[in-house]
Length: 94
Image (cartoon, rainbow, N blue to C red):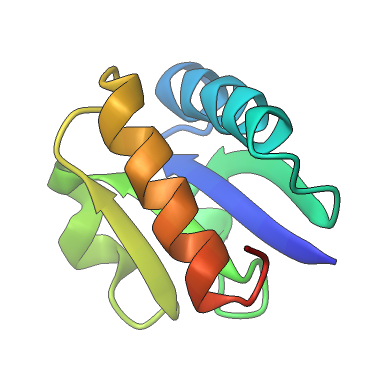
């Protein structure tokens, strides 16, 4: 099972929205071996997930976590779809 983790500064609003959008894309791409969660960035460590999704304002804080996807826009679903596809490919899911 591969875990995708959406993160924001508080773990509430934007990370939850990104999580829901990632879940939609995971279903659309038919990736059954992916789980999606969300959290605040300060609670995340390298072992927390396989892929971390953050907005560009948190890119520096996410360094060192591992496979970090930096989103230019957290509301651009096309950008997110491309990012999920790329991450899935890196992890052998496509």
